[in-house]
Length: 584
Image (cartoon, rainbow, N blue to C red; front, side, top):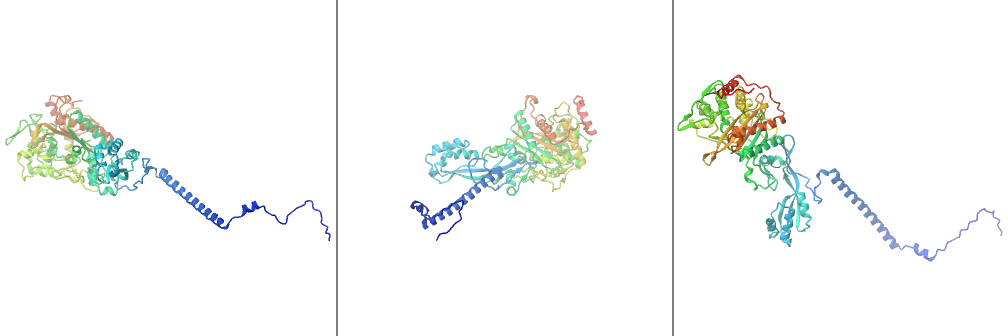
């Protein structure tokens, strides 16, 4: 049967079935077992890829944290150790926030001696990298029978990296915290130090050991003032060929210590057995006789107890005999002296007569107000115990000696705190090394305010009465007193060795600060006409310090100060008696 179809414009040929070639059939066929294995492999590959990506992001995130977010904390060496995040000891700063003591990451380098094959060569190379180590000591550790020895504790990052590059497998490194003192020896005696385990062993570090584990400590000290005092004191020691010295600056209205320098000093980061003699803190621990500076207390005592009036005159025409002793003045005026002149010319005779008139009991009671018989109640462990005659009654010679600074020995900090109370209106503040350390403590009234003012005016005359005397701080209305005391050799005094001191306050019309300078055994030089007493050396160093620190402390010059009439009359009398005209 025939079928008629409509013609199409295109012709399609579709085979009813396709017979594949044997080669193609072989390529398409996958064994079921193999197919299952491929699926497992693909899953594992995907899992590993995910792990790799996650690992990459973790590493990238850690690097970003260390290099960007935590930049300031990253180690300074190229070696990577886990940094100790906690600082077990906080900073000590000065009153302005300048860091005086801080904690840095360091490393303990140790060795297993049993694994060292060539100890001599290893010791040589280690000392080459860390020169402050002793090669014999290192060699002894490397040849020890022990399995563990410290090579260097508290190594710096630079030292660590240098030793690590040696590549010795028997050396190990442990990250630790190390106390550092950025100002070097500038505050060494006050800060003290810590042992290898960061435990305070001296100074502020010991006194506030527990507090420094809890919070930062701010001191009353001022880095700039401390530097000025230290530099000028160093210059004075060198100029006058002294054996050492000390300098203190005190806020007389608050008791805050702005500077406390003891020379020679030391590097607080060195071991305690090095420079041991230089670690003695003279301002707080040294106990000394200060000589004529004590005449300030003797005068104040007599005025307070109405033994003398400011207008009285004491005869100092002749030496004073007490028992078998004869007292003379170093530069005697050989005439009656006003109370002001006794201080101006530092008359031993006048001071002794005043003390004898007052009696030993008034003298002793007055000095007790200034804590002159006890250790100062300051937190430092380095506190000196004053020395004095503890007998119930003082003999006349003992009372006379105390009036001009012999027979009683106190620390420099006792002295400047006492002078501050004499001149600040009569209020005694316990000296403090902490900023605002006395803000919650009431000062003790020890002297009538009117007498305090008169004493300042007399102290101004002591410094300024002689217009021919060089005064670097003449524009700051400084009042002060000097003292020269023979030093003891055993139980006797050596007349060839002296301790010279100056204590000054400024400005006397509105007192703010007190400065003390003490030189140990200064020598006479050509400039001082070979004299070595305080008026020629300690006084000049003290006035130079005042002239430098006053602008920094915002103390304005005093250009129009006029002393009261009783002071002016004393100055006029002295100038006339010495055949001099007052400078215009």
